[in-house]
Length: 219
Image (cartoon, rainbow, N blue to C red; front, side):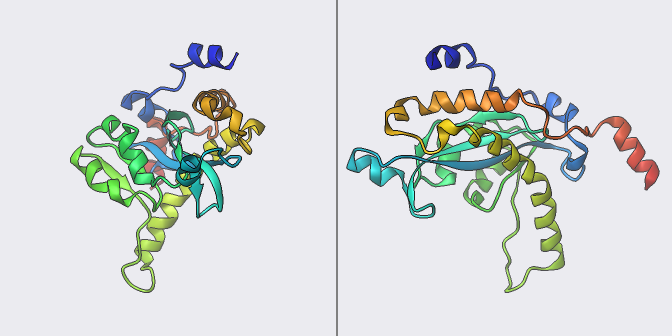
């Protein structure tokens, strides 16, 4: 049943056109009008793998357990638009981002929002004439006022990516993942993501031309 559903819905998680993303961008993203997506990695706890090689690759010292890690891209309005294949929990976010083919999807002029775990991909994003926006790292012992504001602004919109990912992880089948489901975990993640996408929108407000006009009048 899982294989059938996964096969029939394989096109339901897709990379939307840039024009479509802009047309549906929420009002909350008015500071990032060219945002194409937000990226984040998420880990799923698993039972102890049977082989030593799997245990080494999947053990996350940060989580203190064996995990499978995914890179997930979410559009500004909360639509899950890309999921990588599963990687061992010790794999770095930057490696997954490069290996998953995500960077090939970025286009000139657009913005990608991420957290502090993705600084190594900044140069690759810039090569494609796009912009990677991550919270600033303090160059001095204390953040400047500008750095604090930038961190708050990015965090205020990236929370919607975390909310979208949380919808996926509410599925009980993912906590923890039993060993016998390891061969099917990518298919399970795809179906759980589709279920998350067909729920009510995370954000109802849209950054439309009328909203832009109203904001200019208020100013």
